[in-house]
Image 1 (spheres, rainbow, N blue to C red):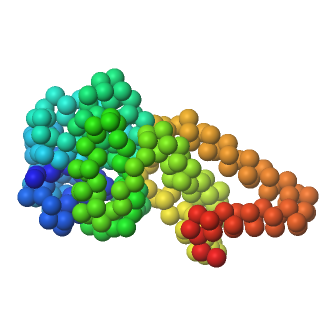
Image 2 (tube, one colour; image 1 turned 90 degrees about the vertical axis):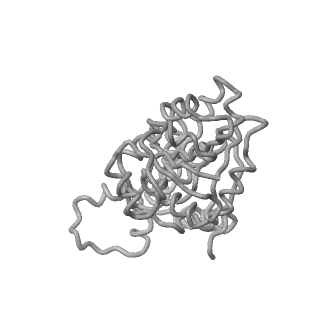
Image 3 (cartoon, rainbow, N blue to C red; image 1 turned 90 degrees about the horizontal axis):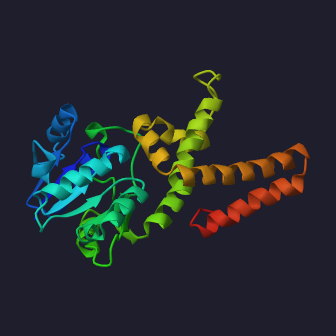
Length: 277
């Protein structure tokens, strides 16, 4: 089989490295509108070759769309127009509602397209931050968009690159990542903004580093992700504000029992979620 990656940023280039290392494909080609990004990806060995158009990429047997959310619909329509019957595709966008909506207008699209979301990344940008092992041991959500969705074909690929396939519905996925990914990103950005007036060498420890790491990620990309999932992100913000208000009132009242109960409940929940005692 041959594979193609449309969009050669961090995720697309990392995927190219992983696909090439897997031995599952004869070759992996790449396409990106940004010629500099495309040349960098080729130079770093993320793909075997570049193709001059999305239409040519669509001729591969497996196509992965690792594009920003705002570009997804246009890429899907171009792919649909150019693909031969043997081509199967997966998108790798962080929000699944848009691809599910696109398929819903013509349900037969779900026979060749599945939704996907690799739950992995780092704060870097572009091919220079690509990592062959980025997906190792990490969940890769697969969203079937029709009863005859080619899920098995992509689960094979996901396992071959060391990731763990997880099947979810589009709504279930988007509600979950609003809490586990999108809200934490906003929280990291908000914490950094709170510290804007502190000296560069202010005292901090591991908690600060861990909580604020993702604040350095790609702002234009995250703008699109947050807006694409905005209704669920707003609900997640409301939920967090409710929690902060609860602990604020306990602190104001100097209520030691309430503060401890708040922390203990969170500790127990974290343990049940797989945290460390």
